[in-house]
Length: 607
Image (cartoon, rainbow, N blue to C red; front, side, top):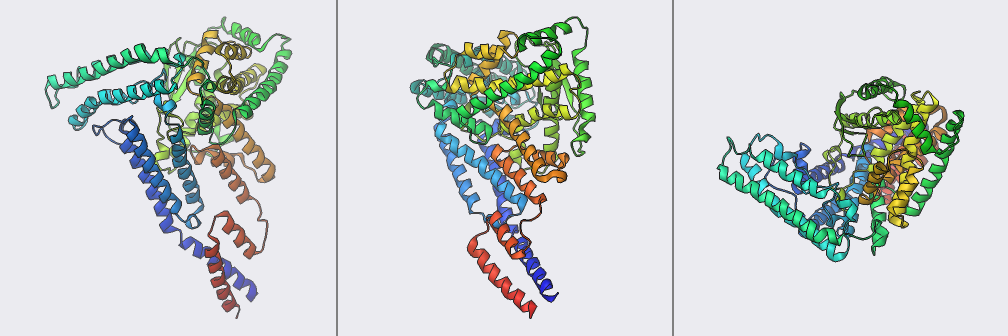
């Protein structure tokens, strides 16, 4: 018994020693997380104000190569400091945070290699010249001089963007003209936005009306110069083919875009193959339902048949969505732990010019009333609200995440992969997985409702084929439209606008399905390994509590969770000590010294 007690003391001292050595390294990690947040405030001031991280300080983001090099240097310095931290002295949660920060900074630095690709084309129908223009209409609460300084800095910022696009022309790395459709209208809208807001800004503010008018006119003139440049120089120089494969080095750039969006490495060929397999699988499931109705035509024709039934109905689109979302919220407790939910607000609009039926931003579900048919109500509602994006956002808000993870750097899609990761595969993969959860929750309780789920999933599977087909395998836009039309009854114009998005944002469309498949794969693994110990609520907690991460990181987190619930492989505490030391990357020499010292202590206790 004395020997057993001494061995327990030996183990207790070991654990106590390791815990006692964690403080200072953890503090270094937190300091570096704060340093990155401060860096974002300094380098991207409009984003910082738009995210509520700072007030208007009179500066604007720089689009010069000197700024790109400065950001590289600062991130390299941060990475060096991060790698100096002794990870063996971090707690489990701190080690996870270390890995996330390391990947965050490393992603930015890897993207630096591609700073002369998409980063040279900061304007498209996705990216206006005024990236975070909401500050222009924001009520000035303090220091109007700072507002005026930022206004006066915009012309230089626009000139820097023009310089980048001239560089793209010289390197033959421009956007396709499809990506530029509508950009002139966007810039005109920016001009009107500036004029409308400045007409009231000079009242009761320091400076003369002439000063404000001069500053406003300068911004307007620079935007007009941008229109002239695009029309006379850039549009004629846009690349001839829609796919990135058509440019020297384009395939490497496309792979970098895929890596960025997915947070894991899959080649275009692998993704293309996965997409085809998923299309075939889903086609079989959809045909089974069609056969139940005696229907032998195409999937697109069956969807048209379902939609035609809706035309005879008088139904309130808003109320249908409202009822579906309320039911979903009430069922969350079946598969999730209870958390506080931020109220969800609704915003309805009617716009035939956008391919978007609905979307979610900051606790608001935006519903496009133009699309009246009910063939996609359930998946869209679950995807955007509960248990999709809104629930995901509620979960994130309750975690004590570092600021750089709470407020990821957004509206820089043009710069990908030379920007910080936003982890599309995690966020959109979860939302697509949320659609799948509707099956468990009993929402797809009729064949036609289940067909809705398959239709939405098929749309994302087709994206895998089309995105890689366009950018890696030479698909034309017409071929992409034809392929997607086989599985969708939407008008050709709607499908065409979707494909325009894939042309403009290479790789992003692949993130949805790949992310969802990874989450389902991890759940299947957990169920198989844990058996009766598996709790779906705990699994979902592991996925959501960490916040957005790359798929490789997410897999590591789930695997660690699974291991923590399994019985230890060895009962011998000395062997366990050695195993845990490997798992936590403890320096081997340090371990040996500690082990010898504690052996002496254990021997003395035995005596």
